[in-house]
Length: 365
Ligand code: GLU
Image (cartoon, rainbow, N blue to C red):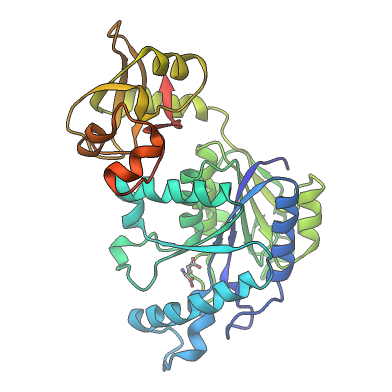
């Protein structure tokens, strides 16, 4: 297994195995794996479940399946316990990102999350993501952390996605009730048959089951991210990953993606405006693989929002040289065009990004 940036999804069964507070029983081995990844210069983003389970014993509830407000209160108190539990196994700082599907759908918030993750990773900090359970209504939720983690893998442009639970991988039948169930080592195409093999969860606290894991794997592999379903309760699994082996089920990433992403940027994403660039910026974007800085922008056309797609035009020849997603809306960009990036903060009073169009969000035509 070879990767540079990995998203690791850790299920409630590992964070809160006794369904009463948090424990280090499994987390310790996962944390030590993450530390080893850091030592090999790999970047790690954690998506951790377990807030509801960790807070469950602190909130009075009658029924085995608590009401939504009761679960939200459990999440509020459990999230603190869960974060503290993670932090005690790391020397580097952990950070908390609580997000909902509503945040991922909103262009500006999407860009903010992307930028925050980029900066945390650059500073060697471990981002720990969970759904913002206490504020999210059902319509605004992703609903389960398997799918949330897949979206985090996409937003962070990870090249590997590990889904850790207490099951070894995908089996042909439910291994708890069928002795002849066989684990599938490699899945190159996610078909209806694969979904049919997925049983449902029997844990009333956890939200996902094998089905949501396969949905999450599908999202990730379509976007070129190698995905594995692994048993995080077995510490030998981590030694195997570090030795380059596959200890669970590997979903092979689609190879067509970079083409698909370029196609999406080029053809599907509607342009909301144009930026006219000086010759220095044209050269940097076209020939040096650089991001677009404010200093190279001569003029702006269009009333666009942050997160919308723009055409980058050579002001001299009027030729479109690239297309990409803009970090600023047009009102703010008018104020900072032609300026050094270092001045953005003093001009606008805030600086979410020193670049206007990040290289990762750009296609050169
Ligand atoms: N956000 C939920 C929690 O922290 C978990 C959702 C899931 O496990 O899929 O308890």
